[in-house]
Every structure is written in structure tokens, then in C-alpha cells.
Length: 124
Figure 1 (cartoon, helix red, strand yellow):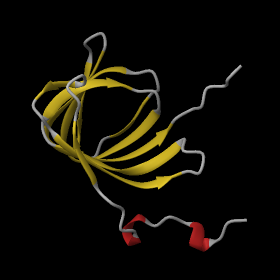
Figure 2 (figure 1 turned 60 degrees about the vertical axis):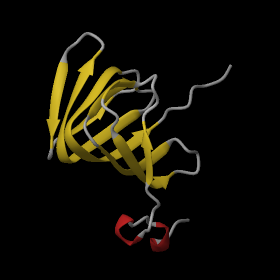
Figure 3 (figure 1 turned 180 degrees about the horizontal axis):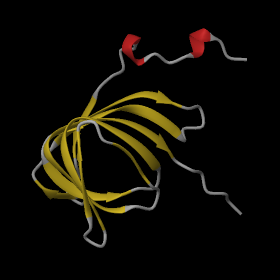
């Protein structure tokens, strides 16, 4: 049984910020400094929630997880493998499906809340 103390309240946590640059294999343009603050990870490690930020640049994406995004700041362009694109700005909320491939371009500093679910594949 869970209780009120089991609720994860982000505003009262001091979650570490991990800053990094993308690998050469993913990077297309720029050298954006990115950071992630993963506020919650489920015990099974399939569900994560946090805040991600990036400076301008573009890179290849290949989603194995479902990701809900709530853009808090900035502008990005997400392009699929067929070249169709979606521009997302502060206030936009959307889900990227598992299996999505393409590119992500940060036009100006982007900050988002993410909620990710990684479905485990059944082993036979």
C-alpha cells in the first residue's frame, strides 16, 4: 500500500542535472549542450519523468520509447524519415510514438517536460 509520502513532488526535490554533448554519430549540425533532470524512474525502469533542455543544433532521433512532451520554452522542428516536419513551440504538448525515426532541430533554446514509457519486449 502506498501513502502520501510516496508521491514524488518535483518542486521539493534536488535532482541532479546531467549535462552532455551529443555523440558524433547522432549530431547533424552545431554542438548543442543538453541537460536532463530525471525526477522519477519507476522500479521497473520503464517509466521516467523529468526536464530536458538543449541549445540550438540538430541530430538524428530513433525512439524506442513513447514520449509525452510539454514544451516550456523555445522552438524545435521535428522531421520524420520521409521529410515531413512539425514545428513545436512553448505551450505545445504532444506524444512521439515508439518507432519514430527522423531528426530533431532546436531552433532556439528548448526546454521540455518529458514523460517516457519504454515497453519491454517479451522474450521467447
